[in-house]
Length: 438
Image (cartoon, rainbow, N blue to C red):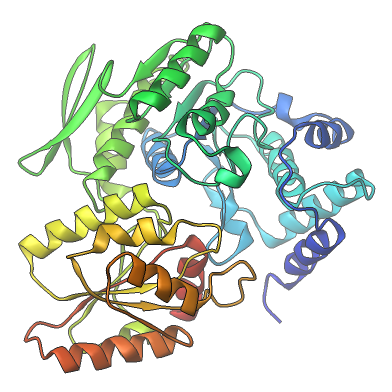
């Protein structure tokens, strides 16, 4: 029996007892929190982070910089990759199995069989933990949207942060950038600073209007702050001057934007000071799995052709596809190798437009259904999407079969260089890969 068997059983029971589909509302959450004694009113200062892309990376930079400055940091993120415990970090340490069991039991009793979603009841458990364990600061990542997300019960965040907004979850948030941006902007609170990452003009206009309506100071990318790569260094600039910094540890040009957003958020508050040295240390020590993560060992790596590079990324929408393909194009310029994709996606995602960014870059695509995921797109449907995006593709039965197909295709093509293999398309697939790869 696994060490997490007890909490896994409780989580499974919560899923079955409350099978309600996602239903964005704050009423159920507020009722549950009232029964729990309103833990949301007893939290340390909160960085509340919403957006479509880069939320997790921005949270990771915030955590790394704050911890480098000696702060005790709570973190709430979702989804998890391998273990649910990854979602709740208490003062620097993942929540223990015993603590998680106690919290889930308490929240289940408080819910009293009232209809409630899985994310709501587990978010309540996290807030209860954050209220009980002392810390200096809480980094709170929105689950879906913002305005009606279960995390949006925080009355006065230290800073609200909105990462780039793009098309995703249209069936819940709306089918235009303006509608989606309005949901994200719902985390902006009266007179509390909001920091916005790079945005389209349409999204920025919505965020700006909501900030004005709330009397919230707006610090925006390209207006009050910016950053760029210069000779392998990161240059951050705002109204107070220029910072010459190390390049972020996480791979990709887009990580400069995420890191800059974290720096701007830290500078937007005056509760505590984070030194330039702590920011530098955070940039070089940050860790965030499944975001262009290089896999160097494990069964999947061993099954790849000898000498291959194997990468893993959980990005899953067209904006993420653009960022990942740009990084791979840079890698191709530096160290040319034939690129193969192993792709699995949820059936709610825009697979063709995600994959279209790899046209002319990827030699071949192998499609898989995400193991154990009921909302996974079938390998055949994903194959059709890849073909529609102008890519050569094959469907595979599972991850092992996919790697075999990559190996066979690479041998058939006869390239002298070993391939570069990217497993991508979903955080759910990334989690299965990390678990399977040990």
